[in-house]
Amino acid sequence: MLGLMQDRPLLISQLIDHAAANHGDTEIVSRTVEGPIHRYTYRDARVRARKVAEALISRGVTRGDRIGTLAWNGYRHFELYYGISGMGAVCHTINPRLFPEQIVYIVNHAEDQILFVDLNLLPTVEKLLPQFTTVRHVVAMTDRAHLPRDCRIPTLLVYEELIADQPGTYEWPEFDERTASSLCYTSGTTGNPKGVLYHHRSTLLHAYGSALPDTLGIGARAVVLPVVPMFHVNAWGLPYSGALAGAKLVFPGVALDGASLYELFEQERVTFTAGVPTVWLALLNHMQANKLKLSTLKYAVIGGSAAPPAMIETFARDFGVEVLHAWGMSEMSPLGTVNHPKEKHQALSADELLKVRLKQGRPPFGVEMKIVDDAGKELPRDGKAFGDLLVRGPWITSGYFKGEGGEVLDEGGWFATGDVATIDPDGYMQITDRSKDVIKSGGEWISSINLENAAMAHPAVAEAAVIGVAHPKWDERPLLIVHRKPDAQIDKTELIEFLGTRVAKWWLPDDVQFVDAIPHTATGKILKTKLRETFRDYRLPTA
Ligand code: AMP
Image (cartoon, rainbow, N blue to C red; front, side, top):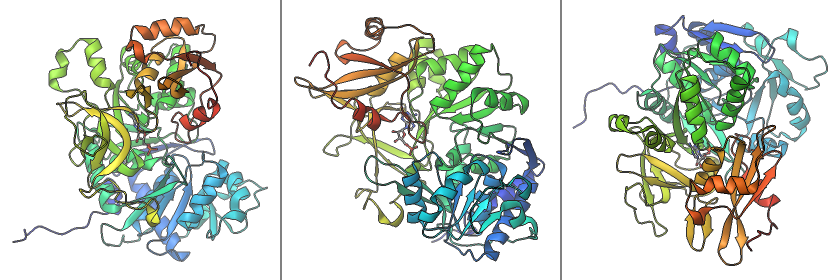
């Protein structure tokens, strides 16, 4: 017997309708690429999102078409999220920091029809345009007055003109909630980037799951500043969960340096923010150098890479900000786990509590996870055994766009994350490595993340990375690569001594190399492939 409840599809357009109806005068504030701060409300955003939909339809866009964006976090990008998906097309967010060949590859692979582009990214598009095979129009996300005179993109349209004459009264259509809504390419370990294709249902369930108190815990009183870009897994869903909750949104635009972010945090009374560790390094350095304090910020989500312990401590001790360590992937929309200590942890000493906070956290309802050994046998949840982390749930991918990469689920419907982890009896997962980054020494695994964290705890270390280097006896041994803080002094012996008090002796790196900078991926993770390439022929002193 079926139940008798209404069968309403879960659609992204409902989020902006909900926010406009119930939080109509709540603000959305943006630092524009043009320069000034722009502010308006959810009510205004809804009208303009409808105009976007109307403009797309007038240009021949139909359901399922892919519409690309090359844009920073701002109100026009927000309108595109809702206008494109709301009418049934697919919002394809493109990371402008990718190599040009990769941008060309993914625009063509996605078959983008129209590209919406922020002002400072127009030159990139101008250069690549001859290589795009499906793009009919490029839309500059600005008004006529700001359009650069020397821009030579044929068929260029201007955002404000495109939507100006539209009525803004569009009625969002209803369709299957599994209709594709947005697309984000992720660079895997090998081969070309692969497209993760979200649907309306997965996006809404993810937004519900994200807003829960032990996940991101966003409510209508929150002021949310996503530093994480809207091209990196939909800014971790914040443009959706923010609307779901009716929170004030603050978009930082292209200025992600410490000073610009600090100014927005204070001026807009931001309470909640999210980003990768590298952006927090810049903010913390700026605040420390200028002896600044944060007066309203309560929570900073750190994800995308492991949150270094020193960062968690500094935020709490010096700035009164609670770090929510989180883990996820593009393939998971992205939220997999968030770290909120439980009541039982409140009695722990500061050191013990920090150990809990270093874990990547517990999954919200909706994400199932388990760890398995090489034979696929489930390992115990004892916080010690580590194995390949598998996940399952309604906002986790079932396969890549156009079938790239083949079948990705096992017979039980589990997706292999490529991460190696432990899970403890309280449900806290801790990543020890990416499966490809783990260092295999004499048949035992050494966690590069733990070693990096230990090195980053030294006050002279700005950033640290650990890779495995070939060793005749042990197969692989760790090499520590360090970027020192400006003017800081530290040498190999001192650093190894420091690590000796923090990790097992056999884990100690066989050598340390000091570098001017550590390379990062387009989403701010340490680019280990590049480091492995640089140090491919490196001979360890112990070899
Ligand atoms: P992406 O799809 O680009 O967001 O990358 C996902 C990968 O980033 C995960 O599979 C992890 O390897 C890594 N990652 C994300 N969050 C964390 C975290 N908190 N700690 C360690 N690694 C993380």
